[in-house]
Image (cartoon, rainbow, N blue to C red):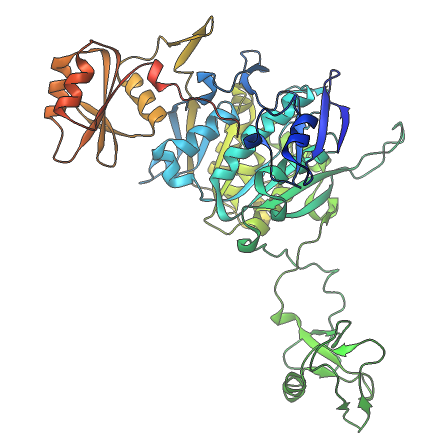
Length: 569
């Protein structure tokens, strides 16, 4: 079955369900989409299909995207990250183990962090909490970004980034995707595909506006959504939220119990319980048993223990049906609910006031989020010392709050102008103790810490008339680092070698490889070691010489042999 709707600019979007029909029938039905059974999802699985799903996106200089083949080397390559500066106090921290502000496209930044060994060792599978506030695709144009992508472009953009975020997420971690009605329903199915429907945790509704737009055509929209997914639901544990005056309003202590205030808790249950049918006798000889389709929720033995420890309440007269006493001092936080009101976690007005307080009225960020909202997300989704990631940094709220709350963080922002105007100065104010607003007081933040600023390097390749060439900057050490990243080697400066992967050494020659070069490289190998020898050209005999001198070693020519075939994931 399939329902076809608008995909923006007249292109169709399909919600498709492949039942347990024969492969021939399924392929005939979706023949324009799939060419063989290997591409079909498991029978009965709900998937989201759209025009261009099997293609890739490449960022343009104007801030938009263009469709390219998934084999395009500018998509399959792993871009380098270059640390341009370190800010604040970073004593003894390695680059990848510290806080990082990455400037560049989220796809390139995430791909580098997840694939380059020096970063992947510290990040891949180790991010406890991911919160992203991507473009909502509302059709509007904001000062910092264009929020009007063609629908299939938005879906592809999100799909490719979600796949990388999944690789970075810890086994017990969670992903929170912040959206509104424009794309929430589509993203929910997309997340089911990437993370598995069974790992869906909740859809949180946030009251972003405290008021009513009486000029709205139909409804006055006052909420956003936070879609919460676990990497593995069986290993995910959600934290508690702080108790409130309202939640604790029913605590009392009419019997002057030395353990303090308590609240009544029902001792019966609506489900059948093996030991749940028995009589109990009150302080004055009254006999009680659950009525109707109710059972005691505890066994007779547990009931007796509660009675002996004075944890039962029989009313002021001692003749009412018993309740359990639960003491305020023994209860922790509250289980989070799925409706977050503005008075609990702030709203848009509060968020804009925070930005105004930091940067003045003439430098307003279009779509900030309140710090109290991020405090709630971070507090229930992580612990102090955990790693928090946001790949749509914007004004830097996630990183700022994570820093104040004692978490490590990585954040990525595509627009350099946004980084210069908002993200970096905001984080610098947090470090210097010059940000007294937001959640600063409630979390006890003062000052300290630091972060590295990394920039995504340009592509290693240039494509002209469908042919790939090495970019002009790909020379000497930069060329060697680019090759190491692309082939998954850890950079190691031990001339003539520039990288290592186990017992294999990487040697990169910025020129032509001949028999003499091969002999010189092989002579430097240790016992049991092999080499991958990469050059921009090779003489006819180079491969044969390498094979005779070091069986198992390989020779590769750049860029031809560095281009990995694209895979529709």
